[in-house]
Image 1 (tube, rainbow, N blue to C red):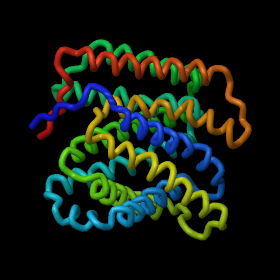
Image 2: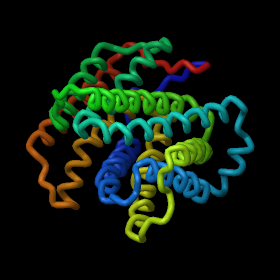
Image 3: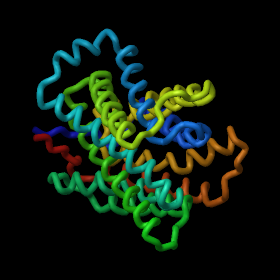
Image 4: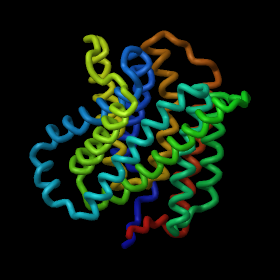
Length: 305
């Protein structure tokens, strides 16, 4: 089965992309403020509460959607949730071993993994897409910098961040395929729920505190759930039904300068000039990719088993 996706986002999709970017960009500052909450515990709560919130928001269709799930789609939803949990686990753990700059740059290779997975599945990738990816990634490097330190600890963290990007790419690609047949609410409830269960097991094995936080910490947990999980991940999962995983993943690169700019607004942390230069490069890369897709003789086809 093949599905031809639109060559570029329409006005409604662009609006949702902006909302989604703002949502995920606020994740970093909010999680940084929740110093009393372990990273894995935060990931557990944001996915668990996200699953509950989506089931409530889509109460009318959630039950019917769950009952209508085929065995194949159910397995894919659960597999996607497991990939999301592995992404969170690898990404948050990498920050303990390597610099934030290196971890950010490496996890942003998610979009490159998406393109490679698409190419391996038989999709046609035009040259301008590769050029756009390169320009956008240079923008990420300009913002985050390059960590030249070499040590076993740093290499471990870099490897975990790289794995985090790979798991995020698989999560995105699977979500793109599932969303061809499954409504957003149904997909997110099963995906986030599976992720929460996997993270709960990880927290239990690692003896990570998941309860007993103060009021401020719970407020921040709820805030991260609302803005990063509901207005971030869920919107991108919704858009995967109409936009390619490559375009969605490239748009996520804007989280890097977005977080810095939001930190400047809400925390008074003036971003360096590199943030603005990197933002321009990422936007240029996005423009090249969209332009390349619209000029292609034939649209990229998504192959579905």
